[in-house]
Image (cartoon, one colour):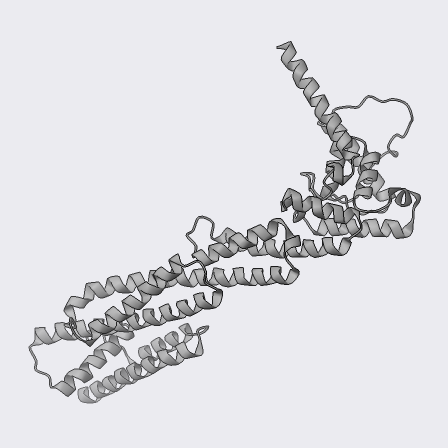
Length: 409
């Protein structure tokens, strides 16, 4: 048991020695990752109480860094040094250096060197060098955890550019990474859902680019974010259309036997609309190489098929009601009268009424305005197509109500 404890202690000491040694190495030899954030997060500099950190030459035993009191002392020392050097906020990327060295002064020196600035000039109070270091630190803070989500190879590549002073490339990479990350935020909405293959393929491509933003330009990232939002909206339309289609088909199956349309033109229209919708739905569910224009065109066509089925369903409700009332009353209608009464039944069913539940003209006007309000936000062609049906239906019901009122008088 004692040997096991001793082994763990020796192993821990070796790890700390290697971490401290690694902090002094240049990046090419495996030095500290300046773009890797730590759990400590960004901290605003605040003046610590008491005097400055002790700077004597004598030997002082090093306390374990896990001790909360030691951590507080070290953080206060860091805040003092950042305030003394006028560096502003302590970025999350700094704490890796402090954990590796355990020495606030040495950690600040190595960090300033890692961001491509001269620690000696910063320490002497060189105004230009301090402003440059503060600007780079502000950039790291504003970047948040963007760099921390990159692949290790991408961080090392960007870290070398940061050390070399290639700040423009690093800033562009940060903007690109942030844009790609915002594009991937769309994916969180669909977690656990079955996506269109074309949408899923786009997210996979964005995910690969987000790991190494140097492979993508800012324009590519912006375009990827727009495409992700467009595909997300298309996925919403696809899911809603499929639900609407299944509901309409189920209702048509329920009412079809009472319409007397089997073998006629209505059945031909039904089969054509269902076949067109099924073909497009299966294509969107299986084909991966579709761009957003092709997806939207397919959705528009599916919407037209669904609207055709919806109109057929409303007509079926009217036809089934007319057949039921005709068979029960036993009355004989002429061909012209049957067509006119059938259209009236369709109109009443469209607005949610029947011959047994006739509306008043005021109720009909309210229903008409409500349907017009529901069309807001749709395309102009859809609005016109719906109005071509709404207006004749409304006029037919209005004429019938007026004739009925005159006959009663």
